[in-house]
Image (cartoon, rainbow, N blue to C red; front, side, top):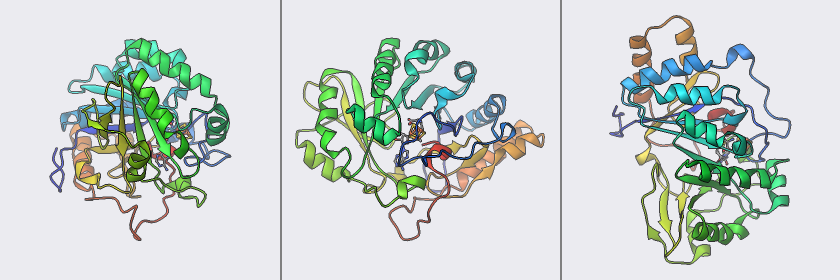
Length: 322
Ligand code: SAM
Ligand code: SF4
Protein backbone atom coordinates (compact mmCIF):
# COMPACT_ATOMS: atom_id res chain seq x y z
CA UNK A 1 0.00 0.00 0.00
CA UNK A 2 1.11 3.52 -0.69
CA UNK A 3 0.43 6.09 2.03
CA UNK A 4 -0.63 9.74 1.56
CA UNK A 5 2.98 10.81 1.20
CA UNK A 6 3.86 8.31 -1.54
CA UNK A 7 5.68 5.83 0.70
CA UNK A 8 5.30 2.09 0.19
CA UNK A 9 4.23 0.53 3.50
CA UNK A 10 5.32 -3.10 3.64
CA UNK A 11 6.63 -3.64 7.15
CA UNK A 12 4.82 -4.47 10.41
CA UNK A 13 6.63 -4.44 13.74
CA UNK A 14 4.90 -6.47 16.41
CA UNK A 15 5.59 -5.96 20.10
CA UNK A 16 4.67 -9.37 21.49
CA UNK A 17 5.10 -8.32 25.12
CA UNK A 18 5.84 -5.19 27.09
CA UNK A 19 7.68 -7.23 29.72
CA UNK A 20 11.43 -7.43 29.86
CA UNK A 21 14.15 -9.07 31.93
CA UNK A 22 16.31 -5.91 31.61
CA UNK A 23 15.59 -2.34 32.69
CA UNK A 24 17.68 -0.29 30.28
CA UNK A 25 17.83 3.18 31.74
CA UNK A 26 16.63 5.02 28.62
CA UNK A 27 13.85 2.53 27.96
CA UNK A 28 12.22 1.42 31.20
CA UNK A 29 11.87 2.80 34.71
CA UNK A 30 13.79 0.95 37.42
CA UNK A 31 10.61 -0.55 38.87
CA UNK A 32 9.46 -1.71 35.40
CA UNK A 33 6.09 -0.83 33.91
CA UNK A 34 2.77 -1.91 35.39
CA UNK A 35 2.22 -5.32 33.78
CA UNK A 36 -0.72 -5.65 31.40
CA UNK A 37 -3.41 -8.02 32.58
CA UNK A 38 -3.55 -11.34 30.74
CA UNK A 39 -6.70 -10.26 28.94
CA UNK A 40 -5.22 -6.96 27.79
CA UNK A 41 -2.41 -8.67 25.92
CA UNK A 42 -3.11 -9.71 22.34
CA UNK A 43 -3.13 -13.47 21.97
CA UNK A 44 -0.83 -14.91 19.31
CA UNK A 45 -3.90 -16.08 17.35
CA UNK A 46 -5.15 -12.49 17.26
CA UNK A 47 -1.78 -11.23 16.07
CA UNK A 48 -1.86 -13.81 13.29
CA UNK A 49 -5.31 -12.62 12.16
CA UNK A 50 -3.88 -9.08 11.90
CA UNK A 51 -0.78 -10.25 10.01
CA UNK A 52 -2.92 -12.22 7.53
CA UNK A 53 -5.09 -9.20 6.82
CA UNK A 54 -2.01 -6.93 6.59
CA UNK A 55 -0.28 -9.33 4.20
CA UNK A 56 -3.22 -8.98 1.83
CA UNK A 57 -2.53 -5.24 1.82
CA UNK A 58 1.10 -5.77 0.87
CA UNK A 59 2.85 -6.15 4.22
CA UNK A 60 5.66 -8.62 3.52
CA UNK A 61 8.12 -8.04 6.38
CA UNK A 62 7.50 -8.71 10.03
CA UNK A 63 9.70 -7.82 12.97
CA UNK A 64 8.95 -9.42 16.32
CA UNK A 65 10.01 -7.19 19.18
CA UNK A 66 8.95 -6.05 22.63
CA UNK A 67 9.69 -5.61 25.57
CA UNK A 68 11.83 -8.67 25.32
CA UNK A 69 10.22 -11.08 22.82
CA UNK A 70 12.08 -14.11 24.18
CA UNK A 71 10.38 -13.84 27.59
CA UNK A 72 6.99 -14.54 26.01
CA UNK A 73 6.03 -18.22 26.16
CA UNK A 74 5.23 -19.83 22.81
CA UNK A 75 7.35 -17.41 20.77
CA UNK A 76 8.85 -20.18 18.60
CA UNK A 77 5.39 -21.47 17.70
CA UNK A 78 4.38 -17.92 16.79
CA UNK A 79 7.34 -17.60 14.39
CA UNK A 80 6.36 -20.94 12.85
CA UNK A 81 2.83 -19.71 12.28
CA UNK A 82 4.05 -16.43 10.76
CA UNK A 83 6.30 -18.36 8.38
CA UNK A 84 3.41 -20.04 6.59
CA UNK A 85 1.36 -16.88 6.01
CA UNK A 86 1.31 -16.26 2.26
CA UNK A 87 3.09 -13.05 1.30
CA UNK A 88 5.31 -12.86 4.40
CA UNK A 89 8.82 -12.94 2.99
CA UNK A 90 11.02 -11.73 5.79
CA UNK A 91 10.76 -12.40 9.53
CA UNK A 92 13.19 -10.76 11.93
CA UNK A 93 13.44 -10.22 15.67
CA UNK A 94 14.87 -7.52 17.90
CA UNK A 95 16.08 -8.97 21.19
CA UNK A 96 18.38 -8.06 24.03
CA UNK A 97 20.12 -11.38 23.32
CA UNK A 98 20.25 -12.55 26.93
CA UNK A 99 18.13 -15.64 26.24
CA UNK A 100 19.22 -16.18 22.67
CA UNK A 101 21.74 -18.90 23.36
CA UNK A 102 18.87 -21.12 24.44
CA UNK A 103 16.55 -20.17 21.58
CA UNK A 104 18.62 -19.36 18.48
CA UNK A 105 18.58 -22.77 16.83
CA UNK A 106 14.88 -23.41 17.47
CA UNK A 107 14.00 -19.96 16.18
CA UNK A 108 15.94 -20.60 12.98
CA UNK A 109 14.19 -23.95 12.53
CA UNK A 110 10.84 -22.26 13.10
CA UNK A 111 11.56 -19.88 10.23
CA UNK A 112 13.11 -16.77 11.76
CA UNK A 113 15.37 -15.18 9.13
CA UNK A 114 17.49 -12.78 11.12
CA UNK A 115 18.02 -10.97 14.43
CA UNK A 116 19.00 -7.58 15.76
CA UNK A 117 20.65 -7.80 19.15
CA UNK A 118 20.90 -4.76 21.38
CA UNK A 119 24.28 -4.07 22.91
CA UNK A 120 25.33 -0.68 24.22
CA UNK A 121 28.61 -1.53 25.91
CA UNK A 122 31.38 -4.09 25.63
CA UNK A 123 32.40 -3.48 29.21
CA UNK A 124 30.68 -5.87 31.65
CA UNK A 125 30.27 -3.27 34.40
CA UNK A 126 28.91 -0.57 32.11
CA UNK A 127 26.60 -3.10 30.49
CA UNK A 128 25.29 -4.13 33.91
CA UNK A 129 24.80 -0.47 34.76
CA UNK A 130 22.88 0.64 31.65
CA UNK A 131 20.66 -2.49 31.60
CA UNK A 132 20.28 -2.41 35.42
CA UNK A 133 21.43 -5.96 35.94
CA UNK A 134 22.16 -7.53 32.54
CA UNK A 135 25.05 -9.94 32.06
CA UNK A 136 27.26 -9.08 29.08
CA UNK A 137 28.54 -12.65 28.73
CA UNK A 138 24.99 -13.97 28.17
CA UNK A 139 24.52 -11.54 25.32
CA UNK A 140 27.90 -12.31 23.75
CA UNK A 141 27.01 -16.01 23.83
CA UNK A 142 23.63 -15.10 22.32
CA UNK A 143 25.40 -13.35 19.42
CA UNK A 144 27.61 -16.40 18.85
CA UNK A 145 24.58 -18.68 18.86
CA UNK A 146 22.77 -16.49 16.33
CA UNK A 147 25.78 -16.63 14.01
CA UNK A 148 26.12 -20.39 14.43
CA UNK A 149 22.41 -20.95 13.83
CA UNK A 150 22.64 -18.99 10.56
CA UNK A 151 20.31 -16.17 11.55
CA UNK A 152 21.79 -13.83 8.99
CA UNK A 153 22.52 -11.01 8.91
CA UNK A 154 23.16 -10.56 12.64
CA UNK A 155 22.89 -6.89 13.52
CA UNK A 156 23.95 -5.21 16.75
CA UNK A 157 21.85 -2.23 17.87
CA UNK A 158 23.96 0.22 19.83
CA UNK A 159 22.21 3.28 21.23
CA UNK A 160 24.84 5.93 21.78
CA UNK A 161 24.42 8.20 24.78
CA UNK A 162 26.55 11.16 25.70
CA UNK A 163 29.28 10.42 28.22
CA UNK A 164 28.36 6.75 28.47
CA UNK A 165 29.57 4.82 25.43
CA UNK A 166 31.03 7.37 23.01
CA UNK A 167 34.44 6.10 24.08
CA UNK A 168 33.58 2.58 22.87
CA UNK A 169 32.60 3.43 19.29
CA UNK A 170 35.96 2.36 17.88
CA UNK A 171 35.76 -0.95 19.79
CA UNK A 172 32.41 -1.66 18.14
CA UNK A 173 33.87 -0.77 14.74
CA UNK A 174 36.80 -3.10 15.47
CA UNK A 175 34.43 -6.05 16.01
CA UNK A 176 33.03 -5.65 12.50
CA UNK A 177 36.51 -6.16 11.10
CA UNK A 178 36.78 -9.63 12.64
CA UNK A 179 33.20 -10.95 12.84
CA UNK A 180 30.40 -10.81 10.25
CA UNK A 181 28.11 -8.65 12.37
CA UNK A 182 26.51 -5.39 11.40
CA UNK A 183 26.69 -2.73 14.11
CA UNK A 184 24.12 0.01 13.85
CA UNK A 185 24.67 3.13 15.92
CA UNK A 186 21.32 4.61 16.90
CA UNK A 187 20.67 8.16 18.03
CA UNK A 188 18.83 8.18 21.35
CA UNK A 189 15.23 9.37 21.00
CA UNK A 190 13.43 11.45 23.64
CA UNK A 191 10.65 8.91 24.09
CA UNK A 192 9.48 7.85 27.55
CA UNK A 193 12.51 7.30 29.78
CA UNK A 194 14.76 8.37 26.90
CA UNK A 195 13.64 11.92 27.62
CA UNK A 196 15.36 12.04 31.02
CA UNK A 197 17.76 14.93 31.35
CA UNK A 198 20.71 12.71 32.29
CA UNK A 199 20.83 11.44 28.70
CA UNK A 200 22.03 13.28 25.65
CA UNK A 201 21.98 11.99 22.12
CA UNK A 202 25.15 11.83 20.08
CA UNK A 203 24.77 12.79 16.44
CA UNK A 204 25.78 10.59 13.54
CA UNK A 205 28.05 13.40 12.33
CA UNK A 206 29.96 13.26 15.63
CA UNK A 207 30.28 9.47 15.40
CA UNK A 208 31.67 9.69 11.90
CA UNK A 209 34.25 12.21 13.12
CA UNK A 210 35.21 9.84 15.94
CA UNK A 211 35.53 6.89 13.57
CA UNK A 212 37.63 8.96 11.19
CA UNK A 213 38.15 6.22 8.58
CA UNK A 214 37.11 5.72 5.00
CA UNK A 215 33.54 4.40 5.02
CA UNK A 216 32.55 2.40 1.96
CA UNK A 217 28.75 2.42 1.35
CA UNK A 218 27.16 -1.06 1.39
CA UNK A 219 23.65 -2.50 1.23
CA UNK A 220 22.70 -4.85 4.08
CA UNK A 221 19.47 -6.86 4.02
CA UNK A 222 16.71 -4.97 5.80
CA UNK A 223 18.66 -1.68 5.86
CA UNK A 224 15.51 0.25 6.75
CA UNK A 225 16.44 3.73 7.92
CA UNK A 226 20.10 2.79 8.46
CA UNK A 227 22.83 4.11 6.20
CA UNK A 228 25.43 1.34 6.09
CA UNK A 229 29.16 1.32 5.41
CA UNK A 230 32.09 -0.93 5.77
CA UNK A 231 35.74 -0.47 6.56
CA UNK A 232 38.05 -1.88 3.88
CA UNK A 233 38.54 -5.62 4.44
CA UNK A 234 35.94 -5.90 7.25
CA UNK A 235 33.70 -8.97 7.54
CA UNK A 236 30.80 -6.94 8.90
CA UNK A 237 29.57 -3.39 8.54
CA UNK A 238 28.56 -0.33 10.50
CA UNK A 239 25.37 1.64 10.04
CA UNK A 240 23.91 4.84 11.36
CA UNK A 241 20.27 5.38 12.29
CA UNK A 242 19.72 9.09 12.69
CA UNK A 243 16.17 9.82 13.81
CA UNK A 244 17.28 13.07 15.45
CA UNK A 245 19.85 14.55 13.10
CA UNK A 246 18.73 12.96 9.84
CA UNK A 247 15.50 12.99 7.87
CA UNK A 248 14.60 9.33 7.98
CA UNK A 249 10.82 9.72 7.72
CA UNK A 250 10.74 10.04 3.94
CA UNK A 251 11.90 6.40 3.83
CA UNK A 252 9.46 5.16 6.50
CA UNK A 253 7.83 1.90 5.38
CA UNK A 254 6.25 0.63 8.60
CA UNK A 255 3.41 0.49 11.06
CA UNK A 256 3.51 -0.95 14.58
CA UNK A 257 1.34 -3.24 16.63
CA UNK A 258 1.61 -2.97 20.42
CA UNK A 259 1.28 -5.89 22.82
CA UNK A 260 -2.02 -4.45 24.06
CA UNK A 261 -3.47 -4.46 20.57
CA UNK A 262 -3.04 -0.93 19.25
CA UNK A 263 -1.86 -0.11 15.76
CA UNK A 264 0.48 2.88 15.67
CA UNK A 265 1.09 4.70 12.42
CA UNK A 266 4.16 6.51 13.78
CA UNK A 267 6.73 5.71 16.46
CA UNK A 268 6.59 9.18 17.93
CA UNK A 269 2.94 10.18 17.68
CA UNK A 270 0.60 9.08 20.47
CA UNK A 271 -2.14 8.37 17.92
CA UNK A 272 -3.07 4.70 18.01
CA UNK A 273 -5.96 2.55 16.82
CA UNK A 274 -7.62 -0.20 18.83
CA UNK A 275 -7.42 -3.22 16.57
CA UNK A 276 -7.85 -5.60 19.51
CA UNK A 277 -11.29 -4.13 20.22
CA UNK A 278 -12.17 -4.55 16.56
CA UNK A 279 -11.13 -8.20 16.46
CA UNK A 280 -12.82 -9.03 19.75
CA UNK A 281 -16.04 -7.49 18.44
CA UNK A 282 -16.05 -10.22 15.78
CA UNK A 283 -14.83 -8.24 12.74
CA UNK A 284 -14.16 -10.23 9.55
CA UNK A 285 -11.03 -10.03 7.39
CA UNK A 286 -12.48 -7.33 5.11
CA UNK A 287 -13.23 -5.09 8.09
CA UNK A 288 -9.78 -5.65 9.56
CA UNK A 289 -8.21 -4.83 6.18
CA UNK A 290 -10.19 -1.58 5.89
CA UNK A 291 -9.11 -0.70 9.43
CA UNK A 292 -5.42 -1.29 8.65
CA UNK A 293 -5.79 0.68 5.43
CA UNK A 294 -7.11 3.65 7.44
CA UNK A 295 -4.17 3.35 9.85
CA UNK A 296 -1.71 3.42 6.96
CA UNK A 297 -3.44 6.41 5.41
CA UNK A 298 -3.20 8.25 8.72
CA UNK A 299 0.59 8.06 8.82
CA UNK A 300 2.00 11.53 9.41
CA UNK A 301 4.62 12.83 7.01
CA UNK A 302 7.28 12.97 9.72
CA UNK A 303 7.91 12.72 13.42
CA UNK A 304 8.35 15.85 15.54
CA UNK A 305 11.02 14.68 17.95
CA UNK A 306 13.35 17.52 17.07
CA UNK A 307 10.65 20.17 17.15
CA UNK A 308 8.87 22.03 19.93
CA UNK A 309 5.66 20.20 18.94
CA UNK A 310 7.05 16.99 20.40
CA UNK A 311 5.11 16.11 23.54
CA UNK A 312 6.51 13.84 26.20
CA UNK A 313 5.30 10.36 25.20
CA UNK A 314 3.61 8.27 27.83
CA UNK A 315 4.81 5.02 26.36
CA UNK A 316 8.41 3.90 26.63
CA UNK A 317 10.04 2.14 23.71
CA UNK A 318 9.48 -1.14 25.54
CA UNK A 319 5.73 -0.49 25.25
CA UNK A 320 5.76 0.66 21.64
CA UNK A 321 8.05 -1.97 20.23
CA UNK A 322 11.25 -0.20 19.23
N1 SAM B 1 14.17 -5.89 24.23
C1 SAM B 1 14.57 -5.90 22.88
C2 SAM B 1 15.90 -5.21 22.70
O1 SAM B 1 16.37 -4.54 23.60
O2 SAM B 1 16.45 -5.34 21.61
C3 SAM B 1 13.55 -5.34 21.92
C4 SAM B 1 12.81 -4.09 22.33
S1 SAM B 1 13.82 -2.62 22.53
C5 SAM B 1 12.59 -1.42 22.95
C6 SAM B 1 14.25 -2.28 20.83
C7 SAM B 1 15.35 -1.30 20.61
O3 SAM B 1 14.93 -0.01 21.01
C8 SAM B 1 16.61 -1.59 21.38
O4 SAM B 1 17.70 -1.67 20.48
C9 SAM B 1 16.77 -0.39 22.30
O5 SAM B 1 18.12 -0.08 22.54
C10 SAM B 1 16.05 0.67 21.51
N2 SAM B 1 15.60 1.80 22.32
C11 SAM B 1 14.89 1.79 23.46
N3 SAM B 1 14.64 3.04 23.88
C12 SAM B 1 15.21 3.89 22.98
C13 SAM B 1 15.29 5.29 22.85
N4 SAM B 1 14.73 6.12 23.73
N5 SAM B 1 15.94 5.80 21.77
C14 SAM B 1 16.51 4.96 20.85
N6 SAM B 1 16.44 3.63 20.91
C15 SAM B 1 15.81 3.09 21.97
FE1 SF4 C 1 14.21 -4.32 27.73
FE2 SF4 C 1 14.97 -3.89 25.24
FE3 SF4 C 1 14.00 -1.90 26.72
FE4 SF4 C 1 16.36 -2.86 27.35
S1 SF4 C 1 15.82 -1.84 25.42
S2 SF4 C 1 14.67 -2.48 28.79
S3 SF4 C 1 16.16 -4.96 26.82
S4 SF4 C 1 12.90 -3.67 26.04
